[in-house]
Length: 422
Ligand code: ADP
Figure 1 (cartoon, rainbow, N blue to C red):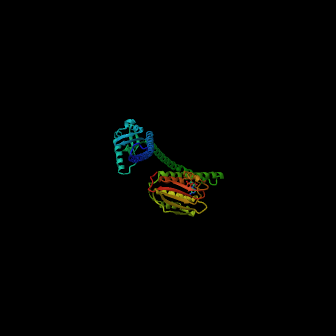
Figure 2 (figure 1 turned 90 degrees about the vertical axis):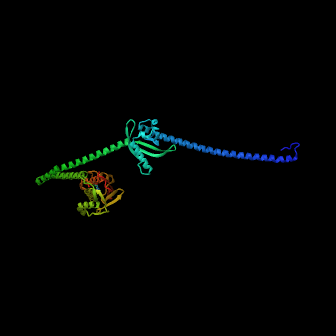
């Protein structure tokens, strides 16, 4: 600082620090301003970042709302949001279901649109849900639109918050197609059951009525053979033997067919049946065969089920006879097991016989299907078809696990509580 002319020395000395102080103050202020500015710049930057974040969130929110709206608009189900009893949001589909335009339906009371009984049922379900009781999420009813068109629908409602206030979000699904398909299925099943019953009845009557003329053919040919014994040449005797053989085979087939058709038409009602007693019944019937083949037969403890006892005997008998008939080189060993699996009993008959190629595992259960010629193994091919019919009548399934040369295990199930007769 320059010294002014005529200024006393003392003042000059005093003024110097003031200017210094001022300078210092000025510098301090500048420093503070610089710091503030830099703070401000920093805060501003942070603010910008926050604003960008917020914009992104807003954008995402807007996009998600747009997506939601277009989804709701395009969905095939009716959708609305109800606050109190007023419809505050509705898609075009729900408006169409009620017979209104979308604009008309918004603001209307749901009480005007739904019949009072549906309202009270929905209210009741809602109250129960609030009390924490288990209520099925969907509710089926018939919806009638303004013009009187009725359609079966499924309602689903849940509590939501809409614009900050509690609301019910309601989805109404048109289930006309499902109901039609169900009705069609029901009709087809009824038709199938009727045609099955008719077929069984036919098989029964036909096989029953065929027995008589066949018996006549057999007995008269046998009579003829006896009369002409010694008078016929070798060829003629052979022909007669063929006729007798053919007729007796036909008799066997007809008898089997009759027995098969009886499973459905002449079965007894289901009763509490001890499987072990049924097994012993079957073993008594095949006792001679068991002894002839020196069979070793073992079994688990068997359960008590609801069944037609006679048919259960038949089932065990057919499976055990096959296990013996189709034995291998070794001494026949048969084991019968039982295991409860969920709501059904799984039983099985295991043997150490010739086994079955997996290619034929399904075919063998068809009527008259055999894998061997009559010369190899006797039989008509009805045994397993009969087993299948019996098991299915009891509401179970039957199948086989086997490989050629490695024995076979036939499995069947029976419902624990006793199936409905099918
Ligand atoms: P059938 O015994 O009169 O031939 P089934 O209906 O009882 O008629 O059996 C059909 C076919 O399934 C039999 O011809 C046989 O080839 C095969 N099969 C059935 N049970 C057994 C078994 N335990 N072991 C091997 N093959 C079997």
